[in-house]
Image (cartoon, rainbow, N blue to C red):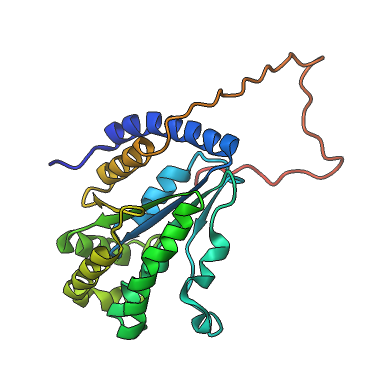
Length: 259
């Protein structure tokens, strides 16, 4: 399948974003909570799809959560404890750029967690997620798939592009040689945590534009189809001529000019 061109991608994305805006309006109106987890290999495209989904959402309604490595204190807490404060409240949308599934992936493969800790996590997480769902949270879990050859091409792009180089880390570089280890860890994770109440959805992200559309279409199709009328605002005419901005002696800095 040929990569999707930008023009076709943007034409398909716009009506979905309008649907998402309507869904966000319903979430706020109904006081529902939406939680979406984005997982996948390094370079799979998690940040890109989160940016595409959230670009027109009300920043007071949604949050992106991308936690750094645990502090020394956090490493002694119950594993899920550092994630709980970031769960959505009524009317909110929370998008996790990686989540508690770090324990079953990078922490396991890179040796940051013991096999006993990983086994305990895989046993506890279905229970934890059932508590969330039973409490009314709308939970979606997406795994973004990416072949090793495509991953290598994206690593090279990040290395060569100064504006993307920040995305590379020593852990990413070390992980390149452990593609098979990550595959085995993912298989164990999916087997233990793909449940009826919190299933995984795998999305092909070898073509990132097509992957974003596929994921967003799935999310929209699985949210309740409930419409809330869109508010209509009437802007009465101004009384008199429009006023110019004035600062009583202070001036804006000179406008940018090419060259």
